[in-house]
Image (cartoon, rainbow, N blue to C red; front, side, top):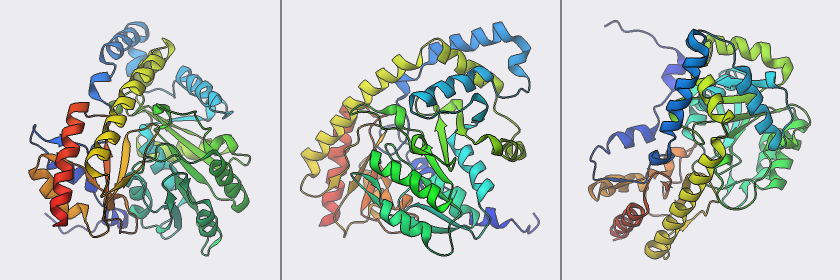
Length: 394
């Protein structure tokens, strides 16, 4: 093979540490607290199959052709956003192949290599890939584990030179931290975005997964300047394999975003759009989310209780009101990456927190998933994990 010269972007892109670690967990006896999945037993298989059959019977070949964005789906999302306090037109709902594609589109819309991008210092690896992975200069801000991003630090980051070109924040049931941003902080973020003329990307795949407390309007609901770009997704609230998401885009930017999207993959499958729209039109999402909330609440409470039983003297952790994750902080002399293979021998796995740290550090932390693990396995998994942690201290 020739010694090809690759692009700078490919050279800087790094595979997610999570993918590499999860690939090690091939033994079916392993208890995985590592994934970021909704529970498979609740995925609406029969309902999706029935909706798919209806779409193919009703729409015929149109469901298998190239097609513009499916208007009934845009209209449903418009109504969904209005319930959240966001007013927009159906045409402003730009359908994507999942939230990650929305991130990739907006990164290329606003950032050139070398530009400054602001993120939380601990954030989802996909956000790192579309920023640091594209040779951006990263400027990070801390996140309070009870109230969300530090908005004072965010303001400092926005006014520092060189001025950033974009910021990305996760307001609800943060991946990996599990924390949600307070209403007051969301309002301040929107005000800062307008004051500094900075596009803020609001990454929101998790807000529909609330199982306790009252919903908080998205940052976009406080936007008075069309500078907040909301990204939503059906991956966690419907099914990951649908690969279906959306961006709320200002009308004047739609032509540019459309051309950018065409350079990726032209469009999202009309078959998937029509089938999901059929599912939504039948009113099937609401009971599906209610059942997921019931199960996730039970499993989250089970994990919190198990952590309290086995690690109350060694660790602290977040207590989410929704989403999929709990963030655990251990004594500073522990390194959860070093502990991983010991945990694998005990047939329990997690994601080391350092995998989410943009600028390194946070070696004594880990992300645990409760949604895709049954209560008995959660209890046993935390028991095994506690043994690994305690043996690492000796």
